[in-house]
Amino acid sequence: MSWIWVLRGAWIVLPVTAGSALAGGLGELDAGVADVAAGVLWAAWGGGLVAMLVPSTVSLTAVRVVVPAAPVAVVLAVGTGHGGRLGGLGLAVAAAAFGAVVAPPTVDAFVDGSSYGSERRFALRAPLAVLLGPVLVAWAAAAAGPVAGLLLLADERWAVGIAAVVLGVPAAVVGARALHGLSRRWVVFVPSGVVLHDHMAVTDPLLMTRRLVAGLSLAEPSSDGVDLSLRAFGTPVAIRLREPVAVPLGQATGRVGETDDATTLLFSPVRPGALLEEAFERGLA
Image (tube, rainbow, N blue to C red; front, side, top):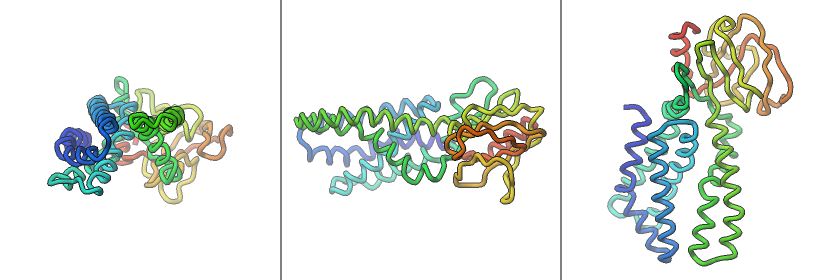
């Protein structure tokens, strides 16, 4: 069974396993606040399910916002003594959904869902510097930005609630756009060759035609060339070229606006083995 089906299965049974714990937590709130919070939870669950059934880069961003909120909500409910008999199971299911949504095969499945025709897209790893802070801030803004204001308004805290909505909605938009930028980073095999589509590493998508590509392989520790892996975790892949190409370096390289001629490029896909298998099948490895 593929990881995306693990994600879908866990998400479908989540209301059954975690519902009692969440309902118990909501029972501690005022009726109006509880109703709004319940509506938000059901809307998030339904939106997440639709996104899971239609893989694309947009739906990848959606599930990356919604799914991590599930274990957080269940932990809060269980931690305040509302777990019930299914509390532990609900927490395990929420954790399974989170693990499935960050699994490399799941990420690749969503990214490749936006492919056209004979294209095959492979997602790129996020830089460590981004994962260790900015991603958490962006997620918190996207997930909680509009919700906090709604709950405050439901509690009739009008001034604070309006202020939270005015500040939270733009923050949520900025956070979602930042997360979507990570979803839109990939290497794509096309009939004419290979394209590096990474706005963080290069200012424009970089096409390397079949005639130009000498081969792809895992990068050796001593590999030279232009490093576009952005210090992401894991072994990068090296693509070797028969003649130099001009690489327009992006902002994350620290050399934005510069152009570097290279015969070897390094990048970090989330599944280097699967990418090399595809390259082999296309006669490029």
